[in-house]
Structure formats: structure tokens, C-alpha cells
Length: 406
Image (cartoon, rainbow, N blue to C red):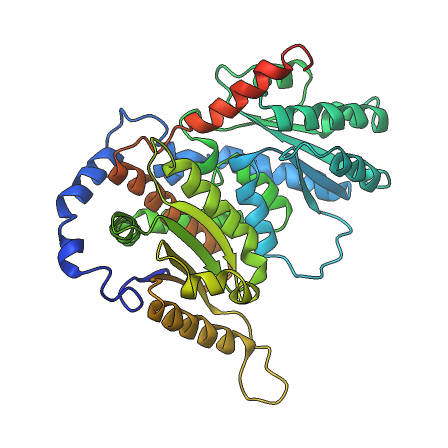
């Protein structure tokens, strides 16, 4: 269960009167969520994001990958890979020695060295490729797919197509036609869900299933969260109040290093959803306790433009300190609380979001919670939370320079 505390460490910054003043605004937000004419809101209905038939297809693909002791290489950029990577890392032992069933991510950068090293890594391993793209035209994943497809044809000259999985829109996508023509496996992603809201579709479910996450539990957590999302709306309101008081930067703060990629996923969700029309909070990732000796100094004594959203995991295991009857989990939460107290003294407010433990169910809840908060925050800013004109602009400029080369 998710809990939200925006009062303890935001004293003087968020008043009940201010919260009450959002009553009509929140009613307007709910009406927008219920408006079937607003495009790209398919993620609101968990049961519509992925079908039982598709879940079976995903589990069958996982079994194929497992039976051939293969690595799954996921090719995507932005929302096409960040969510799956985040929750894979969050649920994996720090020092696990991957032999089989490893999930590797590619196509999110333009590093030739990365791809060269990846191919060398795959030289003595079996592998499948999962290419995720709505159109197949985005530069980074397209180039990675072309490179890895060429390598797959060398490794599996007669059966390479059996090892290619395409995740794309099935309506109007050139990539869908390519998959059909070449007898690749085809997973459909809904047309009315954007990349950053897609982790609960086939986009995220296949890689998460392969890495061992219980995707049924994750979907259950999201489904339960969808039944009452008032808490997520409160988070959106708290952020909006702080933003209007001059807090233009939000540090998403974690105290468990394996959640660092979750912070990156959160950063992409909120940055791409709300950063437009010269509006929006600038999201940054803050990994504690290491950053207490760097960013922590600024949060304590720097300019009053930053607030924190702190993710607390109540139960991080029972491993105890060497000479004290105290677990590291308990100590972690003591430090979290006292740092928030210290930062409040320095005029940096903290909103604390708590989950019981790291689990598939809790992550499903958390995903839906943040989906609602991000989209609602966009509506409160008066912008479209589902487009990304800035992203399209950089793509356009790159195409102008490379159209005769690529």
C-alpha cells in the first residue's frame, strides 16, 4: 500500500486552505480522465492495456527464451525501455551472476563501443532480440536494430527470424508490416498509449516477464491502484503548490541504490509529460546516501528552488549491523527521516511516498500512482500531458543533418 506525507516536512509551504482551493481544479482533472475524446489515455484502463491472450503469448515467448538458454536484447529508447530496465534492476540481486535469462538493453544511445562490446558479449550466448518502436524510424533504436539484426543473420542464418520479436502498433505501423513479411514474432502495443505510459503493456511486460518479475502481480497492483487514485491527485496538488511558490526543481530521492533506474524512469515520465510551453518542474535524480555529500549540500544551503520527493521502502530486509541490534533497513529509514528534518531547516521541503517493500505488486501500484500524478500535473499546468514537441524537434534537426547519410 502506498502512503503519502506532504505535511510533516512541508510545514509552512503547503496549507490546508491551499489544498482545499484545488477542489474544483481536481474535479476538472477527473472529468478530463473520464473524457473519451482525449487521445492517448488508454493507460487509464488497466484491463485494456494488455489482453489475456497477449499475456499468454508473452509467457510462451519467455518459455522459448528460457528453453534455449537465451539472452533477451531489448532495443528501445525513452519509455520503450526505461520502465522495464528500472524494475528489472530493482528486483535483481546486486551481485547476481547472469548465465541464462539475462535481459540487456540497447538502442538508447549512439555508442558504437557499447554495441561492439554487446556483440562480443553475445558471441558465446544464444539470444533473442525484442525491438520496440511505434514507427521504426527513431534513430537510436533503428540503428541498433539494423546492427544486431545483421549479427543475428550471421549467427542464425536459417532461423534468425524465429529470434526476432517486434513490439509495435498493429495499426498503421510500417514495423508491423515488416514483422509479418519476415515471420517475426509480433506483439501489439495499443495505439492510444504513449511510450512513457507503456510499461504495463507488452512493451514492459515481455522483458519484465523474462527477467523473472511476476507480471500478473504487477498488473494486479496497478489495477487496485486504479480503483482509487485520490492519493496520486494529492501528490499532484502538493507539487503544483510548491511549483507556484518558486520551487522549480524536484529531486526524486532514493535510499536504496537498486532503485536508481526507477528514479530515471520517474524523471523521464515527469520531464516529458510536464516540461513544455515554458512550464513545468525540472526533475532530477538524487541517490542517497552518497549524494548527501554533494547534492545534499545544495539542498541544505543552496538557493530555495528545489523540493524533494522521497521514496521510502519500509522493509528492506533483516540484515543487521555488526555490533548493534538494528537492521540496515531500520537505519536507512532513520537517516531518511532525519535528512528530511535537516533539509526542512534549510528550507527544502520533502514529500515522502512510502511503499511496504520491493515487490511486483507494490511496483504496479507505484506505476499507476505516478501515471496519474504526472498526467494530472500536466492538466493543472494547462498543457497537454501526452505530447512531446521538444522530443520531436530534436529528431527533426537530426534528420535535417543526416537525411543524405542515414
